[in-house]
Length: 316
Image 1 (cartoon, rainbow, N blue to C red):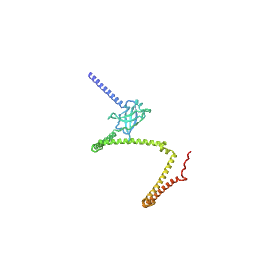
Image 2 (cartoon, rainbow, N blue to C red):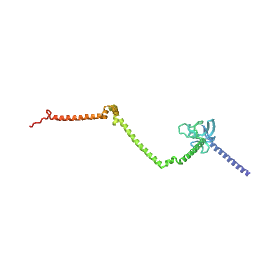
Image 3 (cartoon, one colour):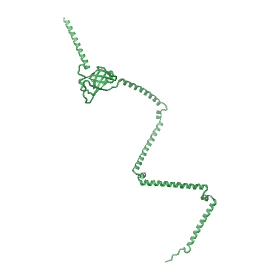
Image 4 (cartoon, one colour):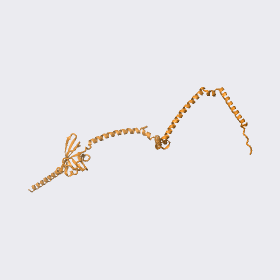
């Protein structure tokens, strides 16, 4: 009898411990799923949930504040997610908060992250719908990385070809590394610098000349600024042009006279080219010279004759 009583006591203790364990497990699971807490339900509409399922966590500022209750397909481009949020956390979440689907760790389960809002909007209530942001999809990221890898392979191959050409004989790199070419390039740069300095000086001089012209300084500035002087200069230019035309006419006449002399035309040509006329011309000149001498002698004789003779002054 005593043995049976002990056996019943042990059996009762085992049943009691099992019951307490089941209750604790149910409570733990219920607390994780917000089955026994005071919660509200809110919604968020996404384009793609990327594997989000019921029971996944909902976090606000990195803290678990709820769970995903239901995931429903609304249309071909919209999925509705219904979430249970602890009422204690609702006073921190605003109506303009943004929900984003993320990952728990690097390769963990999908979760819903509610980004904190610093606005003065009212807190969320039962049935509110949050704004959503389309996050970067991992598949699209992997495809982009794959294309980038392919492009890098092509670029690497091109660089290998370019490197081979640069290392070959007669390449531009070898030409640039030649000391003679380097010296020539340095000399050319020095000449370019010298030309640039001279150009700067010339530009400064031209700027000074232009400033003097605007201010009426110098001869050119005076001519351009003084109306009377400018008119005088204009008339002088006209007179010079007229004189040039006259000189051209005289030059033409002299050219015509020269042509006549060369062709044996005119009295001058006859006088200078005919020997008989030259002899006659010399004879005439000699007669003129003799006549001038006789005239001088006659005048001297007249000075010594009365009444041209000078009277002598008497003594006092």
